Image 1 (cartoon, helix red, strand yellow):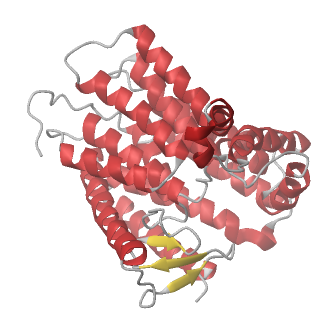
Image 2 (spheres, rainbow, N blue to C red):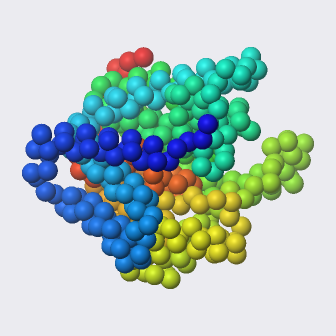
Image 3 (spheres, helix red, strand yellow):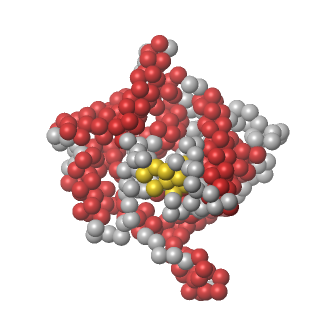
Length: 380
């Protein structure tokens, strides 16, 4: 069976209606904040681009973006942040167990026949047990209910941060161990690097001994370099120590993809800086410009919006920066670490259709969640 995009859009619309009525019933729209204005302008930019670029025939792509924005905004207005954290962590545990069960059946027992097969709009085939998927050509990589393993790794990283720093209860280290293990099971190099940054955040927040400023910044800089140049470093090590690293080398364009994707998007943005080129035209423009560079796929969410909707698209990276830097209860090192995680995630993966990522950004923009102070007694 093929994933029906229309059905997904209808489902999103129904969810948006439900959350909107719930927010209206609870009077969530009575208080207007500066962030409300940012969300409104961001939504309006989509409508202006659709109309001015004559892309009303592809209204579904714009409608999806507006529904996601309204859905996320209504949810954060009606659900306390601590409740969201606990629900999210329970969801991560459930899909982690499901992913491990699917992994065991496919890779250990070599059983694939009973599982439903899905083919997405990009003709990628998945095996499924509904709460977890596995790509047919890379079934050894756990990916949860997401469309690729790196996405799952990113949300597991966010789960560790919530568990250790923001949930208003003692840290459950079982969750931290489980989510860390699942990051390894995604076989995502970007996930491995961000896991180091995550542990740096945890140590700064939970440890009773102070980590030197030099060490903090050294680790951050090292992780930044590793994230973007991991493949090149492996190739270099294979030359220097072939007996060890020859087995782990592979031909990959992931590094060039991460570096050049934002550049290509900004080149496209320059063609129509005020209102962008439009979501439909972006597809053809991206194919044209990306052919000049070594790029495997579209990955940068941060620069996707300026390219598609123009100046209004820069509100998205503004929201990301604002959601981290306004957390005054976090040290500057922790905030920079968290910002690095956001930037890396939103550079290595397309999150423009991700409701979860919008929820994280919006919660941190509005509720200013307090960090957990449970340092002494951490529950298993």
